Length: 476
Picture 1: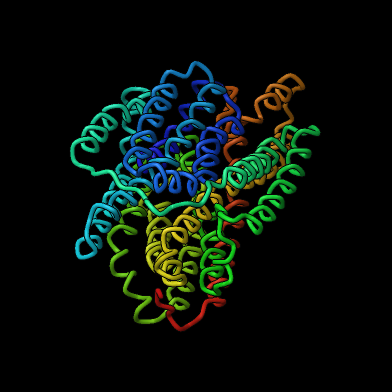
Picture 2 (picture 1 turned 90 degrees about the vertical axis):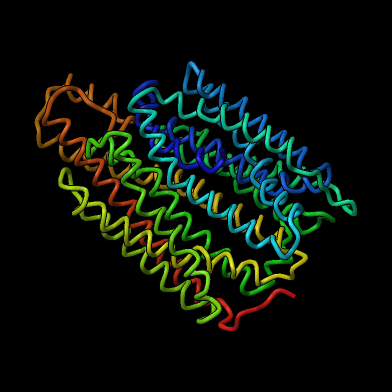
């Protein structure tokens, strides 16, 4: 449910924008509100399961996620949809860590590896199916069915959980839950995200939110250093490999998550793909990660962490560079397919060695916390990148559009009409083919700016691999 929802909604964004006549900033919040609560509360969700029962908290997460999905499907306005997406994020923060914890608790060590491998395989499959399924639902039913689809899944999940999953908890857990840290992280990340998304609208609110976000995150770090049971154990970052791998994760997933948000907008609104075609266009990327992950997982044992985690991001950077090539039109196989395959190959080389490096950098007793922190880092990176890339795209779009509109010598009334619709970016149309082409070209100009930013982040990710200890550190 959570992994399908993480990929399927992106393909529905253009339909959402059209249905609600919403600016791009509001569409960003549909993704960001979900990601904000999931990233901020992920570690708390895992701790709640350890304390009160993993099965119980998992079921609460499924129920909350399902109710929120229903509210998303019935949402009469973009504002209520954003609020419902936030509730979905809270539900996901309860069920995502719970799902893996239940597997670890339910299988003996001899069978646990195969069970986790099956879990990983299904998450990859849902990641591949999600965009295609979402596109089909948008094209043949409604964007609302992207959310309603979770309801029958929930019935099956709840039935199987009640029938077959035993309860488990950490009986020796005595530490308190770090609600103070979780609250500060949520407020800090939310304020910075608000500042970046709302900056194009101007006003003091965006600037004030940025200051509040920075101060709050500084307080979060202070609280975590003094807490007896911190949400994020900063002691783990004393490990050279743990710190380096998380820095690499942040750069790589910022580039990856940021571009994957805007790519469907390009495919649907500029290239005029159907939602199904846009979802299928991403299929090679996800399938390559799925098929090659087992092979790439063995690279770290053979070459150590530095080599694959340098080469993988460099190949991913080449994939982003190839996305600079397509203009408007042309065959998918000669425009986007080569870039998506190269990007998928680069990510496939990176993902499994990156996870292995994180897990091997800490003692076995802290493996769960380390995994949770790395997961939260990757989701936080995508959260901030979408907001920052949106600001960069909007600025680039406006500069390019001003230049192109000046060349068209429009009347004052026509120019005002275009200016009024600028916040919608590529969804803007006034029926004048010359203006529509200027808007499309301007979107691509802004889109190429964020692609260069993604290339820079990915190169920084490859450079970060040089900080890793060449000798593989085993759990101990």
